[in-house]
View 1: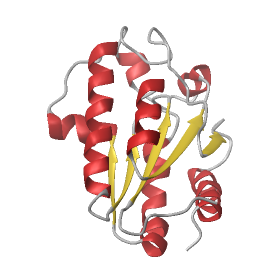
View 2: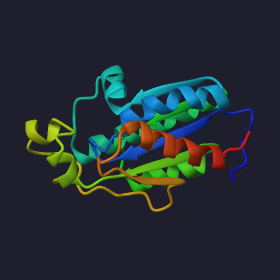
View 3: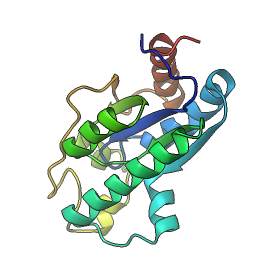
View 4: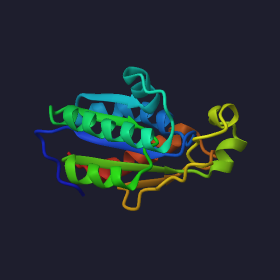
Length: 175
C-alpha cells in the first residue's frame, strides 16, 4: 500500500504500446477513480498532441513530448487534482523522472504484443504510417517497476481489464 499525500492529486500514468487499450481503459477508470479519490481529469496522448499541436513522431520529439506531459501532470496534481494520462511515452528516463518528481505517482503498464495489436486491427496507424512506429521501428523501453502491470491479449472486454486495474488501484491507495 502506498501512502497518499492528501495535499496533492494522484497521477495515474497509463502506458503501453499504441493500440494496447490505454485510452479505452483510462476512460473507464475515470468515473470510479473520481468517485473514491476526488476531482480527476483525463488526457490521452492524442488529446495532448492536439492541444499542443505536436506533429513529429521521431524518437527525439516523442521524448520531448513525454517530458512535457510529465511536467504538465505534475503541475496539475500539485493543485490537488488527480490526473489519468494514457500515453505511449515508453522511455525509461521518463518513468524514472516521474517516480522521482511526482508525489503520488501510479504507473499502470498495459502489456500487449505488437503482432496482436495489428492482428486485431486495434490501431490504424500501423497500416497508415511506415516509419517512426513504436513497437515496429522505434524500440519501446517498457517500464521495469510499474505499480500495476496487466496483459491485454484482446480476449477480454475492456470493462474486465479496467475493473481488474481499478481493484489493484484500490489495494495500492486505500482511503
